[in-house]
Amino acid sequence: MGVLNVTPDSFSDGGRWLNSGTAIAHGMEMHSRGADIVDVGGESTRPGAERVSASEELRRVQPVVVALVAAGVPVSIDTMRAEVAEACVSAGACMVNDVSSGLADPQMLPYLSTVAVPVVLMHWRGQSSQMDTLANYADVVLDVVAELQARVDVATACGIVPERIVIDPGLGFAKTPSHNWQLLQHLESLLATGLPLLIGASRKRFLGELLARGDEPRSMNERDDATTAITALMASQDVWGVRVHEPRSSRDAVEVVSAMRGVR
Ligand code: PMM
Image (cartoon, rainbow, N blue to C red; front, side, top):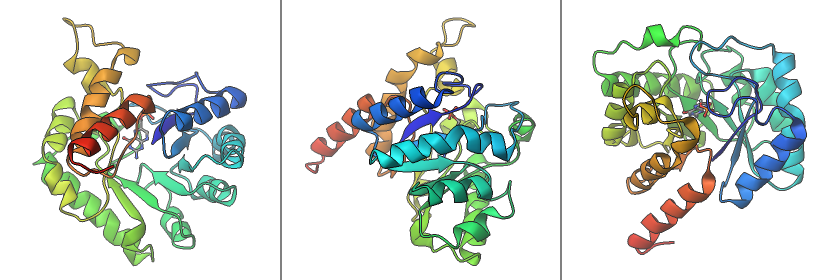
């Protein structure tokens, strides 16, 4: 899954793809570089970020979704709003990625029960403006699995069949670097849910800190090799997908893992 943030302030690529034309070209390029799905988002979720209005979010994403769909690119819409999800699914988006797993907008799960697209439910404890204060866990792996399972139960009770649900532990969302590593070290607990698993580690702060020189984190654009290493490890553990900024190297890593297993 290729990341396409049409925002001025995302931590990883904020401002780079704010212009629709540039965003569309980048989405097409990511598809040609191996992204099976391009995940289009119009609202930053970086720690501390404030929300934008639904109309501004739609203004950013809609033309990009329409153009990518017209070009034959499978598009996922990264939104916490039912209104934005609905407009984009109507425009041809084939997946909804809700980082709040339906918690931010009470209309989201009821809306998703009316359409047939797959849905990503990510572990989330609160809006970005406050999430750094919510990183308190008795056992991060057990707590995340239990809280995600509770969201899956709510989604299925709303009428979303489990076959349509993908789960994601939400690395960096109300989680310290140590929490992120513990989750990655215990993927078996997430995989035991039996649901497809999506992992979004790409260029995140915990990689910058891992690769820091002294107090200086590794810069954003120099975290792709570590991201690719994570992709290889994820592929070897039957993770369903990875959400990355540079699809080519992750795609290659998946091919290598497949070849090692004698499957393509
Ligand atoms: N991370 C970000 C945004 N959306 N969606 C899912 N499902 N999983 C993630 O880990 C995730 C996400 C924030 O990172 P970005 O600035 O690179 O988009």
